[in-house]
Image (cartoon, one colour):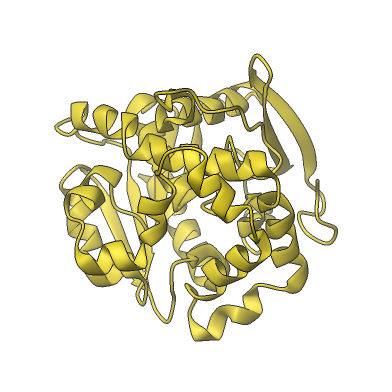
Length: 304
């Protein structure tokens, strides 16, 4: 479902990436290079509403809903959560881009989308021209370095992974309350106006679907199990894709970790900064700063 007034000029498509699994996709723009935009929790492609139309003046843009989110397919999780592993979710996105005829592209992810992007550049390094990560460090490291403060502020990481159907039932009791509580308590005080009522209502519409809540729980269950197994295997494999790391200077990740140092342990070419006066929802809170940093980064890497 396209929200009126946003992503005008983009074509909405439902792209089958495997049997009976469809990814909700918005395609627009023009240019020599393509950009894949991946959203975070508990949101949809709409997080890019203030960025995608401007990027579309210079690039071909693809913004999707991840498997389990928004209007993409939401299969029932397997016992080992493997059908929500970041490996499978990254494969979804590569399949979308290939079916659109885009063999190479820049990948940009926020939150869960950045974790999918991280796996994508490990499994498909030949596909990614660059990778922009927003407000994350590798999942493996964040679990390994969990502190009391992190567990308190990122409580949902540990709630969502509880056995089915406990979190699904609890979250389904009042989806609107959860969306408003989760979003508006994590943004900087200046940024609440960046979340107009129609956008919040669209996030609530999606989250009110029990299959969506289940898909999101499975995403987190996979992150705490099979994803860690995959990540451990690749701990010593260097990331060669150029990385831009952006994080909210007032957010949990930026306060608890040295983000650039964290990524430089695994990647050969890393740059980035904490976005001032910004909480967790970086592309929605400070789209102008994100856009400027991304355009500069893409141009720099294109020029070599």
